Structure formats: C-alpha cells, structure tokens
Amino acid sequence: MIRNLNGMEVVDVVDVSTFNPKDLEDDDLDLSDDALVIEDSIEVDPVDEGEERVGSDSEAQLAKPQPEARSHKIIRIDKASLKGKGVLESKQLLELEGHGFYLWKIRWKAREKLNGAELVLFEAQFGNQPKFCDFSYIVRGVYNYNNGKYAKNLVRAEPVFEKKLKVRLEEAAQKTLDDIERSLKT
Image 1 (cartoon, rainbow, N blue to C red):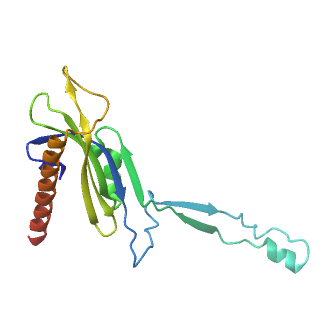
Image 2 (image 1 turned 180 degrees about the horizontal axis):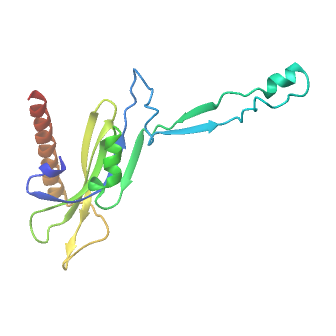
Image 3 (image 1 turned 90 degrees about the vertical axis):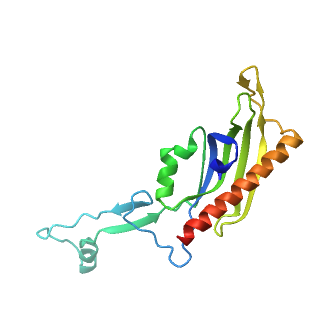
C-alpha cells in the first residue's frame, strides 16, 4: 500500500508493529528452534558402580544414579515493534517475518514527486490483528519544507491538502486489496 500512493514516493518506513498469531489448534512450538526455546539441563552425577555404599538400604536408594532431568522453557513473543530509519529493510524485521510475524501497523514518510514538497507521515493498521480486519489509515501530519530543509516538528496538514492525501490513501488501499485478490485467484 505504501508504494501505491499515486504521485508520491516513499522516503522511509519509521515504525512497524508485528504480530505472530497463536495457532489455536496446536500451540506446541518446535523445540528445536533455537530462536524460540531455551533448554535448561540439570545433570546428576552418577555414583560409580564399584563404590561402596554405607548405611541402610533406604540411604543406598537415595545414592543411586538419577536420570538426567530436563526442563523446557518455551519463549513465545506475540508482538514486536521496531522504530528507526530503514525499518522495512532491517535484518531484525526479516528475522521476525521468518518466524511467522506479519505487519499489522506501519508508519512511513512519503512526499510528492516535486521539489520542495512537504514530507508526510502516514499510518495504516489492522485494529484486529488475528482476523486481519478493522483496517484504518490516517495522515499523521507533515514536516514543512522551508529554505531547503524539512522542519523537525510534525504539524497538521492544511485541510485541503489533508483531504487530497486521504483520497490517495484510500485509492492506494483499494489498489492493494485488488492486487491481493487478483494474486489469490491465480
């Protein structure tokens, strides 16, 4: 969607939130996945077979070698948020996606393909991440362009410009949805 904004170019993705849906039928994780599992091992030293036992039979029972005890602690991260510069191309995001995470919220900066155009901060998100629904998008504001520089502070867009941006957002969202539906049919 961010690349489907008509007449605009993406400058940077500055914030993403990710979600890893819990499998409702089977919540067991692959215990061999080092990124998600920590294994604690408690080893009990076996008593040498040739060692003499002193004391009653019950004390000797206690001194018998015990099998190695293992416990598994499963670590499960459901949501993660990354903020900064170049977030969409970051190694960390790619690793999260490799573990089943997907984007549910994104903030990006874009500008019209004109010199001196304002830098616009957009946001899009799913309100209900597990069901991929309650999608919304908003113009967060603009960084005005003055004397060859962008302002450091975000301000609200002028009403006419904001309305124009919202129309572009809606068109981009619809085009993205159409592209997804078309790809699912093929």
